[in-house]
Length: 365
Image 1 (tube, rainbow, N blue to C red):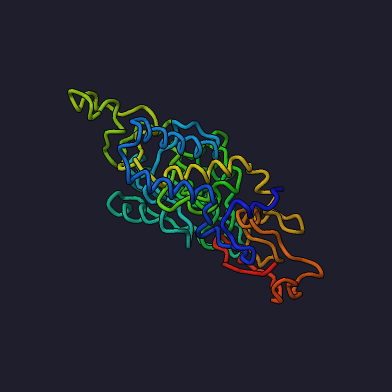
Image 2 (cartoon, rainbow, N blue to C red):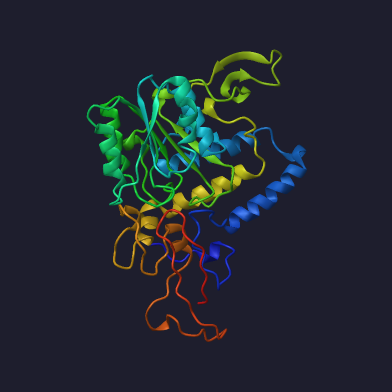
């Protein structure tokens, strides 16, 4: 388990922040990097020519390490919806087939397919929220349903956005591959706090942002693209996605063929002076802590891993997230509810919803 990491954050002693599933706090190192980066943008003539590429590749490598990918398989993007739109441009959905999405899932892995369905002649099938909370069985049943149209793609969150239910992607992936269907994973709620190995899992696409568990800024996200899809056409047409389109060339469009890996899918305007380094720092911290330690820290007092539950339920006092648990220890035993000797204020137990979006709570310790 991780010891308390409070010293790495600007969190007052009397605050217990439990809403990292919505927005995580930025580490002190990230805040300092952001301030320095704003000043850097004020004096751009001081930057070396290699600065931008160094920032890109640092972030790309940090993201790749989180999911056991090669850096060349990761694209720099702005959001989950950008990644889904990129996937939709790469993977053709056959007429008369089904795309599976989850009921009450976030809009990002859903709306792109709903928008395309009528014109492209496929059906978006919504897997209903199961009464027993077993999302994995519900998804597998939809994939395997006898007499149904063939499945061409499942576009789902690995941890359900609204109820925190875990989908066992290790079971869903093989079921899709057996039918020749593609698998897009929105890993927003799991990246960094659940073990993810794309080399073993072999999804077609896996997408995650940094502003939740990865302790990073808003507007930074990463798209893993399996090598079998890296010959596709990017969502945007950029100079950085081509082999040799450079301002310093005598002939600007020297070689407009695409670069051969996932870098071709990088978003335009990727030369961020500020947020790219901030994103890198948070991801590097998570890699340094290690997923096993983070998962162990998120276990319940009764030894149950909250992330592995099929159906969320109201917990005993314990943070609902690894991110919060790393920052704040729990109160228990005789001290619970007693006045604090320094402030005279009564101690309060924090409770948090066990789903993906935990509530904010505070206590005095």
